[in-house]
Image (cartoon, rainbow, N blue to C red; front, side):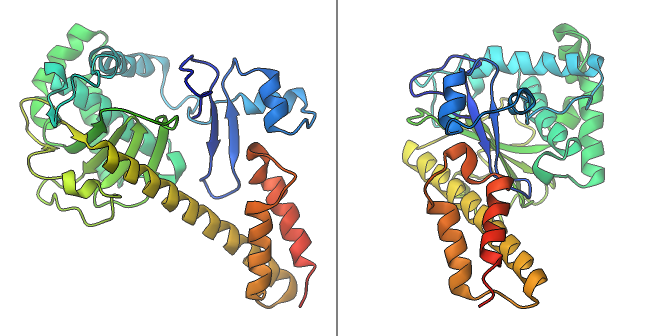
Length: 321
């Protein structure tokens, strides 16, 4: 989610999604000006339906929960925003931060609710094993009441189960770019790895096995028994060096770009093979990818749309060399 440089105003963000098994998708928040539409779509005239679709939030899913449960989720969301997100300043952050002595059970419930909702919504094709998803559902259902006081009492009653989920959480002191609002789920499970705005989160489903068995873009060196939250007194947020955070960010972008371009290359090759009953020559595949990535006459919002990708596939499929 990108805002204009140095502008933190709500409602004017633009997001570009490069995952989900097709081309990119663009989303504009409600207050983005028509000048931005024209610039990012190269003056292309958009219908009212297209503009409406562009302003549909791709990160929410209608009717996932009833209104009552949405309101209950809002209790832990508001607690996290008021007591952690808005309260931890760069000056407050230490190597391992105790989240300003906030209620660690409510903080945990916030993160567990994010993980559970991502799974039941199958966000970006993410899905927990059924038994783990159900375990989290029961914890959340039994621990969130109808107001903050009731929720605090319920979390105390269910603290044994809430604290028994192993979570590593980290952030950094300063964000020097405009890409802090990043939502990513890496399709691996040792541990499950999430980027949620300015936080990186690892969820270990087996508390008896807390080993990291995958590339976490440099974060693995920060993960240990001291920084994984498991039956803790205070929720620990690990502070990552800015240089390591930037390396992680770049590694994530490279990973996403590699996965996305691999998908596009395979899409072209499969389509070509169906037409010509043979594999395309390597130089033809490279020509297709070069025009897709570096070709002129397009914009950020249009470069990787399904329409442009399919048009280039049809163009290069005509070559039967």
